[in-house]
Length: 390
Image 1 (spheres, rainbow, N blue to C red):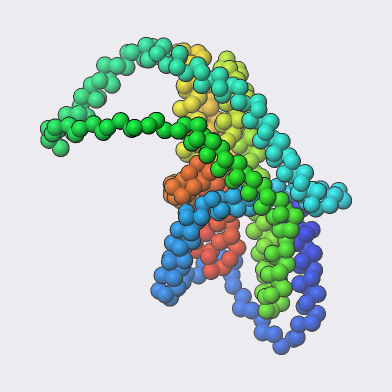
Image 2 (image 1 turned 60 degrees about the horizontal axis):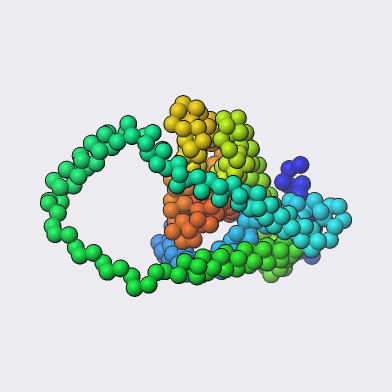
């Protein structure tokens, strides 16, 4: 069933209310000027451009300063768009909207808790293997010691030629008077994560229950019937496209995770479920996520299978899966409309990682895709949406 089938019914009710207002509209209302679908007007007033730049700088600054509040809200909005079709299905089954939203939250929490409990043991086990496996790995890689030493000597010579001989070394800093409170830091981090998750779930529940309220109030305050209908159609199109994009990306990443787990199992690498879930999660971060996964899988393969051709097989197969997904499957399913400029993706990853850390890197591409979809639907912003297109 398409995303439009889930979204049309609730927004259709608002559209019918707007159509009812058309009966009261007078015939003297001037018709709006027709704008071609492919028109991408650019702002010509320098004051508008400068004010827009200042607005976005202030917005990013506020999001950076208020990360503890902004991050849970943005995460809740993205999850709302992802879970909205499920709530639509429960409404079609005559389940109250609040109960459907609660069921969606229980599903999310249950999946998260189940994965964490299933993967905690294998993750701890692999972390315990690393100290014992590292000396063996270094011994097997001793053949690379001479080339690496030559490269290090060459780099040191280049540094000496550019910067000159090193001066007297600075005195070493005095050791800290007291060791850091590790338990306090861990407890503080756990408390912050729990607070962020609680805020996200709370905002997500109320967005799922009364998300259309904002659209209804917006339609009520708009002055003219044509503007009201345009707002409803635009909101319907944006929600449909964003939900379809998020569902497609989630399904693609799930297939990548399943195939990666099967590859690890077939090649004899232990705990394939752990590697499959890791591939699924890291695939949400374009470019940097697969590179990180390749590094982790290479280490796991070498620890399990040694420095042999068999140890390189899982990494090569995962790389093949990622190439097929990135170059064939994703462009075919998402089409050109949802493809994004790789340079914009990298800049978005850098920006949001700097602002919000790892959660920001995970949300960077969904937020960029949402921005592109919204810009494609708003005529004054179509040029910016076209600029983001891949």
